[in-house]
Length: 218
Length: 100
Image 1 (tube, one colour):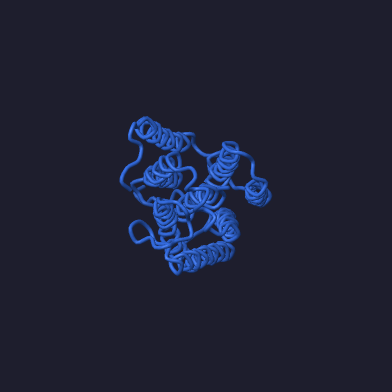
Image 2 (cartoon, rainbow over the protein chains, first blue to last red; image 1 turned 90 degrees about the horizontal axis):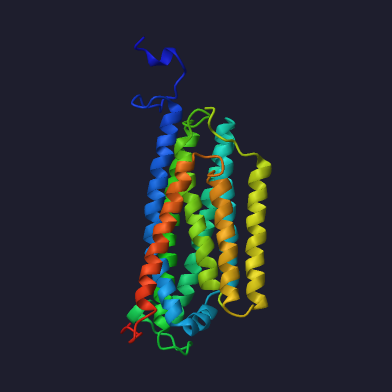
């Protein structure tokens, strides 16, 4: 009777303080959602700062956003949407026990995240060359507004914090890819892909708001 | 694993296609240049719609336990509170501009 494995075939990752695999899965998801709430509130502080300054200096935002490249911002939006799709496909593959497709989809996700960061790198370094630095280091004469540095402080803080999240996501995707290649995931156990997917989709949602707020101002 | 919803390829690709169309739409609206404040309203409306699609169908809240949706809504409500109370200060200052 003490032998749990006799009743049902448990995944090797089933932890015995849970009632069953479903409860373990639901608990992990609940934990991830609570973490995502703290993420929303962390970014929320920066979004609140953005709202305050945009209401104080509406002209600043219209002028300064012309320095941002709408095309590359749009490309990055599409890249992140694509990566959200492949994460969802990786989860679906796990649910259907298509183990090879898990790795393929995670690999594409990782590649798309890298594309996003490369584009971000070129956007930032281009601005650095122009002397567009945040705060007191701002040294660019192209915008006729005395508070131009404020816009770019917000830009660097918000896209920077988002970029850090993409980098963390890339680390997680690499870890998931390694585990999937080691055959850790199947239709009975794919919790790490599911909850990393939740994190990744939130990072996508943050960008969905950052894109119009910085790149699409007339 | 009875409680897990498995999304079809059709659903996932459909949501991704909708997100793509909405991205093109929001850029298109930007070039048309609707007068303020409707430009911001439109851009944020499209962004909220996109975020809702991601949350419902990629993050699976549509099929998930309602408790997880409640957490998300609670997080957003507290963000709203933060913005509202902050604006009660910053919008009604007599000396508006800080040093920075």
